[in-house]
Structures are given as C-alpha cells and as structure tokens.
Image (tube, rainbow, N blue to C red; front, side):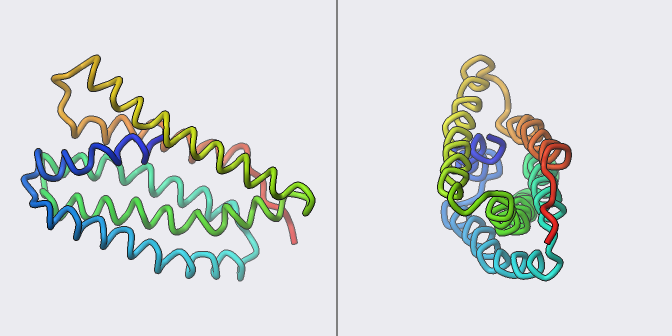
Length: 175
C-alpha cells in the first residue's frame, strides 16, 4: 500500500510541486529502478550466503518505509536531488527484501504448496496495488487542499506497519 499509493502521485509531485521536467522525471525513475534491478541479485546472493532471510526482509521494508518522508521533504528542502535520494533509497529497500522474501516463502512452504504460497503473496501484493492508489485518492478527495508532499508522510504508516509485521510475525527457517 505504501509504495503503490505514491506511484500515481510521483509525476504530479515531481513536475508540479518540485518543478522538474518530464525528462528529469524519467531519469530519476530510471536511476532508481535500474539501480534496484542491479542490486537485487547482490542482496539475494548475500541472503543465500548468510542463510538468513528475516533480517533482509525486515531491513528492506524498514528502509523503504523511512524513505517515503524523505521524498516528501524534497518539497521544502533539497528539491529533486533529495527526491532522487529518497526514491533510490526506497528502491534499495525493495532490492534488499525481494529475493530474501521470495526465498523465505520457498523455505517455509512444502514443495506441493509453493504455488498456493506464491499465489497468495501475489494476491496480497495486488490488493496493495489497488488499495494504495484508492487511499491516496480518498485523501485527495476528502482534503483537496492537502499538499501532495503530505501523502509521502502518510505512506510512512503502512510502510512501518509492514516492517513491524515482518519483524514480529515472520520467522526464519533454519537450514
């Protein structure tokens, strides 16, 4: 929910609030997503080496959550370079958690139930992809004078809840 509520707002925020050009918007997202793709395999390899998944999942979700307000702060200090740092940090968190999370699902599920486990994960991810933008829209409709930067602070809440849930409810599977 946290990341998905911001995706539709990012172009409006960058171009409308921060005054960035559409080219800069593409460059920022390209750097953040490209860096994430490159780092994902590194984080997965490190997770495999340590044979522990939960710390990577928890830290990844925490980093992503804490990056949201950093992006919002770009409206008052730092401009688009601070936004780039926040967006890249958000994607760094995703890089750290993704491979470890997928391995954790595989480690904690019997082989005959892995399809169901990954299907459930995909279904929950899709729910977040629907609920996130709806939450942002609800906030904008109910409080139309709310500056877009505040959505980045609101996104901190579901982000931290995800990190807390990973910390409290997820257990590592010993190898």
